[in-house]
Amino acid sequence: MSTDVTTQADLFLDSKNLLCPMPIIKLSQGIKKINVGQTILTETTDPGSLYDIQAWARQTGQELVKQEQDGRVFRFLIRRNK
Image 1 (cartoon, helix red, strand yellow):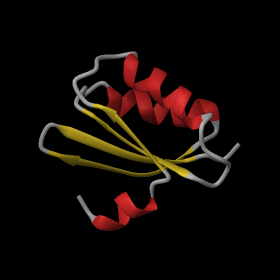
Image 2 (cartoon, rainbow, N blue to C red):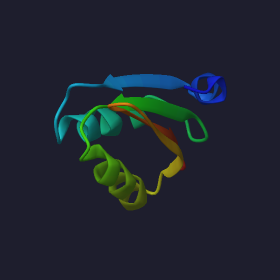
Image 3 (cartoon, one colour):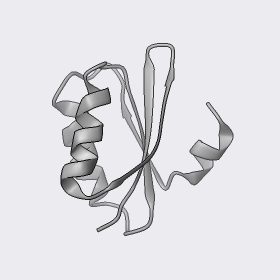
Image 4 (cartoon, one colour):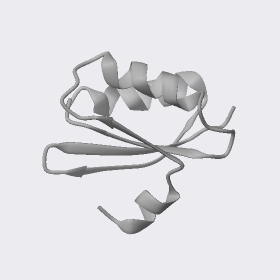
């Protein structure tokens, strides 16, 4: 993982080995713990999270800053916009 993604994150959520809808539920809870402008880095292993997290960001008005894959692990950096 690139260091810049990790250092940008204000909160880290480990959602590996969780199936839908748990990564989204954890993300929905986590976004409330940070301030507008701050970021969450979440890691998942559920391939469905690729679509789910993109859709969640659009529906909630949050910004999906970066998305990357490292083997079975998907990483998403999300900025709270509201």
